[in-house]
Image (cartoon, rainbow, N blue to C red):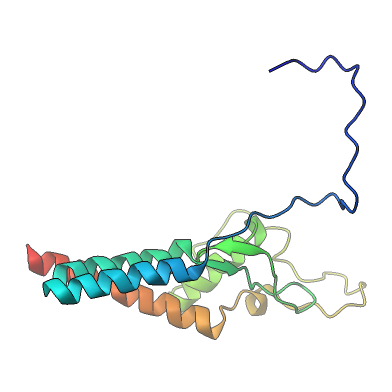
Length: 169
């Protein structure tokens, strides 16, 4: 690698470049579902409930942290955030992650332990001078019905898997 001596011309931007980085193409969810199907077929063919539990645990991991999805936290104007994230438990940035954490605590039925810094996105329009409808952080942080259902199913699947592992010992 050669050091930049500063006497080179700056690179010419490509035609149509807007300054945004191009996103990497994600793998198809069909690959994951093919793997889940193969594990289910293997479990059935071998008559092994342990392999079925392994497939269930892999599906739970996929739903919690690997599924390609979008953030879906409501912006202050009331529109869902369309930034891509990996996993149903995660938000696209620190402020959205904070609201997603609050929503996950509410899903369990527990109030989120107090935070030191609520974040800049948590406060509503204090002066009311923007002229824009501002949606509160509690409303913006609600989980969608599909996300809620799949998180609960994955949590139940994780509990079933742990109980099956304990039973298998």
